[in-house]
Image (tube, rainbow, N blue to C red; front, side, top):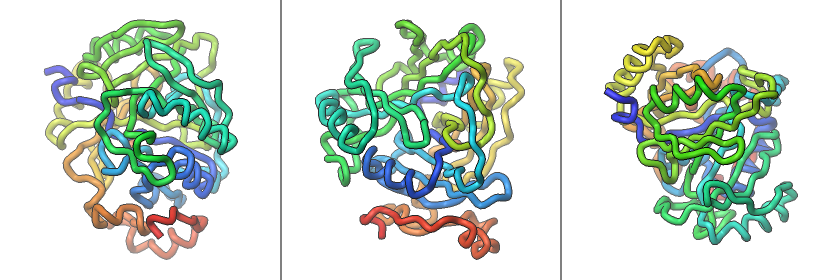
Length: 322
Ligand SMILES: [Fe+2]
């Protein structure tokens, strides 16, 4: 078995932002994503929102999820061992629009840049998280098209870039263990392609040998993990057994995340790699055309609903789900 027998691309990416309202506004109005789920962090005891955004179809590989940690007052330090930049796929011809759109919303950027023959714009989420829009012309997925026109919008993920102090072990993990293809290197960036590459299947190592390890805990401005998609629990178990067979025993048991089942692996890059199933989905507890309309709790938290809801700051959700 090889990991690429079961892993075909990203499932979701999860980060810790600052304020909940600031995140809702940025993710929907600036990134133009569709808000698809309001729930809470399943781990720990302090009530923290877990907000999910995606493309028009709430598709696996487009799901950007955030924990607004400002409420808990926990702040982090960016560094190596973390996701440096999350890249979203947009049409190349829309990059001029994006440069203007970001400027209009007061988001600083250095304009259109190019690497590996691809054009992109880098910018930051208000909480300091690194983001980019990457020009990709063969991505058939549907952008939401509410605050950003559908023909210019984000269709889902393009790539994830990890900041690493050392390249050797992370390269061994991505190349030899995960079986991703080493595409090449340009400046500090080494690129790997998951299952042939293309949108939703690029993972990069950004070599920062002089940068300290960043915060591993949940904290404002800290990306928590990237998740890769498998079909079901059977495939997740196959992946877990396979990775453990190399000696990477830091793989969690399969956890019930209500919308998917997940294992978590601490990789040699320092970054957490989740592997999540695709056979449950976001329409398990609300209709597919009404995703994100209400605060949903997993069944095992329902008896604490009042306590949880009263501890969360109220948020004003986008017009289309009010
Ligand atoms: Fe996750």
